[in-house]
Length: 135
Image (cartoon, rainbow, N blue to C red):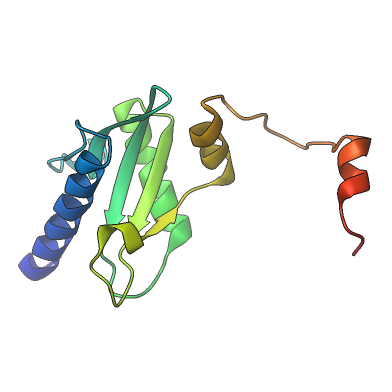
């Protein structure tokens, strides 16, 4: 990776960490890279007491959700956090609040409820099925 791309990435990470700090996450901070045991780009974030790790991507316009989420989850595991999410730079804006967030549904449920989600095949209750529109 070129020095220019590293500087772009560092600047984006700092922008996100600062945005999180002023919006209720006082311990959010950009992390120093640590090789194969990298713990994500931004740490110090908790939702419902659950630690969350952010992997920031200033990617130049191409989304790669699969590999990026895999990387975020590995780095979250290195940090002992159950949730790793990706914040990807959105073309045409530098506002931190306008950037894309990528995560798996289980992580969204965990963040919103504070409870580990039920995994596996879910059978909808009959009363739920009755409210669904027909295809």
